[in-house]
Length: 520
RNA sequence: GCCCGCAUCGUCUAGCGGUUAGGACAUCACCCUUUCAAGGUGGUAACCGGGGUUCGACUCCCCGUGCGGGUACCA
Image (tube, rainbow, N blue to C red):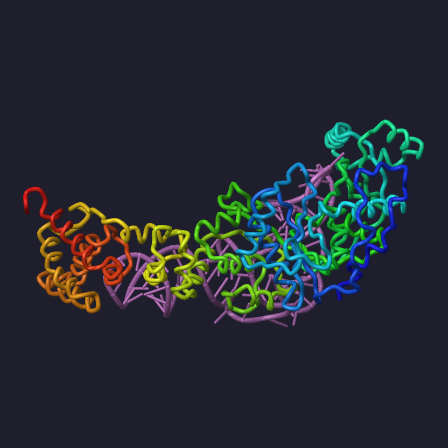
């Protein structure tokens, strides 16, 4: 069941009754609509920070959350736009577009709404302020007026003497008079968590039992001087109010989990289940980043990867079904993925395996569907050509962006030179064979391959030693005459696509090339 | 520096005390084949090291090593 859910705002202190405190935020509604129970047997969320392109590692986290919600659960999208320095408004729409492209549709979130709206954190500021006030009241947090300069100096000094870098709690000991005085001076003020003594212990769904000594953990800033919360405060408040049952995030968050647990306790809330999934690494085993090449989903889309393949591939970076199956659709993943089968060690992003899976998914598409997917890659193709092209390339590509070069011959007459045409053949042999195929092409494309094979075999009969190789050499001339390429789709399909006129024109051009200036 | 996590073929992984350590990608060879693919067959290739526990450790515990993460008024 989805816990206290949206009824929780009622448990917050009703209003900002600490009237001495500056109220940088306008007061929000007294409370959110409070359904007694929220939909979904599980509620998982993806809460990206819109600061740039959607990163492939984040997508995997989103995928895990989506799948782990299961068929009966709800997947929420929440925009974590609390860092105003790095915030990029266009990222919000980009993230949504990419998630939709991947099929990771959210049941609640921006645009689709839901019982816990709004799902954009910058629109929930009063909620965080109230939570901060509650923490302040209970002594779980304290105001801090230290300047960034002082904090930097402090850290530098601690580092220099080999100590862990932590806030020295200077402002914890401020008297109320001193606080009032500092406020009167208009000093910028933040709210810090007062990390209590003791240990933080939890059972991580992926990593197992975890234990941290709270003494090692810093007094984290919860509310910044600009009135926005830090991630730590915002996600605890929102996960609780949104009835999130399982928090699935990357291990880079592991060390800050004790802060979150302390927050839940101080606010009187039950923490959700926690699962920390291992990182996705680049080939050099460092956290996957831009310098490894493509790190943004958009780049993979533009390179011609299918969302099905990307999803399938990403799922196996940290999950496996325990069987020998390896091809999974998103909906299969959502019904099969469990916490028990999540890997605890990091995974290297192996582009070759992605290519392989992409080929698998390309071949699973119907030619009509593949044709549609090819559209952005073949802007010059007429709509009715797309399906035919799809059939021609389906078995020979691993990425959609291979198609333009593979099919380049379709839109412009190639002009292969004699050297390319003849290859290891004599110009005479190449010319004569090519000439002999003219009638076969005029007979339409149905029996074309048989006719060509027959011609090639009889022409090669004179070199019994390497008859097969000779057939290959002869067929190569035809391929190059028709397409200008050494690699192409099957010749009969090429001829069909080109039509008899273009075929004859190309063959005659190559014959002319082979005759050369001297006329052979 | 300090804190934390992780550790099976090159890569993704199966294994949850007794297996010829399995599969997939990649790679190599062969077959099929008009090219390239796709497909088929076969091969090479792994338990980080050292101590324990146990009749028996890839599997459990400890230490080391390696790799990674965190250490912000960023997420």
